[in-house]
Image 1 (cartoon, rainbow, N blue to C red):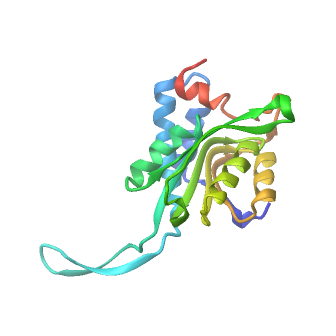
Image 2 (spheres, one colour):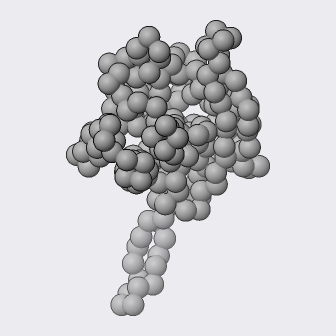
Length: 212
């Protein structure tokens, strides 16, 4: 895929925390905290292109020429359920953002297709820059479906943010939607026969919520 659409967050703090997330001995509490912290750091990079406008601020001493974000509104849309952990961290950085939810599971019985069981998006999502979150970009099936739903709702500026990606998922998303930027913490080797990312982090949803 085009390198200018794939952004790997190589900041030392992100890379260190991802190493801790990978560790099979990291428990659910620490796992959730790390995912939230990584998401905040990655969201910092994903929002780097927000436009600014100049304003004057009265400080205790004088008038200061300052910059504020120029009218752009954000929405985070986690893919249930693993994407919830990332949205939590991102919202800490942008507390005024609205949040939508898309529930998708990969239906292996029907040709590895996306089966949607829930979708609720902000009513004004067409007016917002949207960041879709999920822990992993594996086959790309869920990511492609989520972008499709958000686009159908009228959103024009969409980014996808995940902790771990692999070439299969990144290429699938780029092939379907070449305008969507992908932000990830690491690009792993690929998928195994069970369609898990290797070396990856295992089942992100189970590790996040302690359900296995």
